[in-house]
Image (cartoon, rainbow, N blue to C red; front, side, top):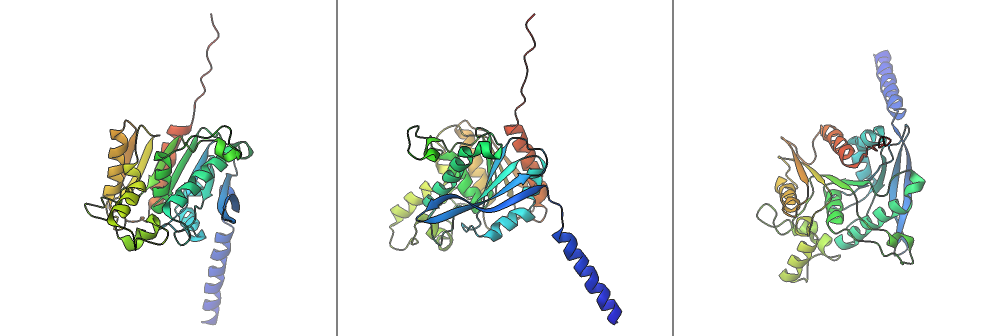
Length: 303
């Protein structure tokens, strides 16, 4: 019996060491500061392919329920996002825009845009093309990423800060189950206990219905589409009990109505998220390849 227990413990330890030594296709630099707000650093992790880079950068907006703790990055890692994209040569910038315990939705949106500008300013340092950036995210991160795309800002050429001289525009957006319309949540309204602090730093208490509606619209990506956008791919499960599938459907309809390109992949039985989501991460990466990879055609000599 004692020998059997020792064997079990040995096998468990061997499995732990194997997992600890698991080969991943990237090197990671954690907790890089991409901006500073009120004396506090905003952080990102950088995932650098070990093999040949493809010259493309992907911004991953890391937020769950509008919280950006490290556990959310671990969720993305477990979903295979960094494995899949770095295997294809993408450099991934996992930016954390802050949490509703400290920032409201408008502030977090500006943090995302700050992250985009930071990547563009340092694009040469990381070997990526600043004009071919993609953006992704899941749930709250997808909401902020989508909102950043449809409210993109141009740069100010003579700005004192080099970051402000660059636009926040990206080339393509691919996101998972994003909230997109806080005025129409499957025909009703979302739970304000959950999103009240997103709308206003102190919550909705003391704010009128008109103020709540105006702020809800301001933070609803599907209601902020004002013209053609970069291509969108949305991925959503039809059994999502946290963010209705209708939210992605509304976003697709809004983008298409404005003359843009938007696709929706519906995962049958998919919740929030689902166990096999890595399969959809692969589909997302293939889609980004089509949107961002450029084939340079060399003209034949005259004559």
